[in-house]
Image (cartoon, rainbow, N blue to C red; front, side, top):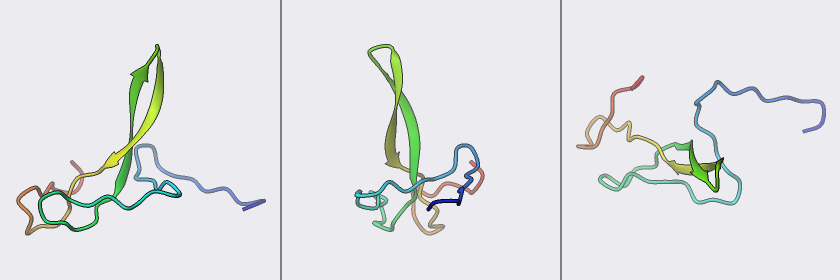
Length: 66
């Protein structure tokens, strides 16, 4: 990817190479991976976790924009 930049909006979902895609624990459909941060030894480190389920038929459904 030399000479190319990829811009992502802040707080956007991001895929991490070498990881299995996350799935909703209720309906089993794939969900986006989101980056959160946690504090370890006084510094913040990234943590990749499953995002909210966007399947409207799932009981764990979260409205877009939330």
